[in-house]
Length: 74
Image: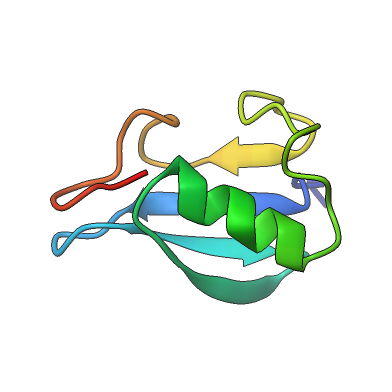
């Protein structure tokens, strides 16, 4: 069985944004890094201490932190 990081940011949707899963629970649709940091805060993580490029914490699927699809915001 392959272990995944606790946070998964799914590929950008055609309508914009990316689904975010934290500890196997869908927490919402992020339109940019600011939304992702808010989801991390709500899950009990310190968003200011999190490196969004840390592969031990976040698995980016379908593109990295720069890709959010249409209508991206911060």
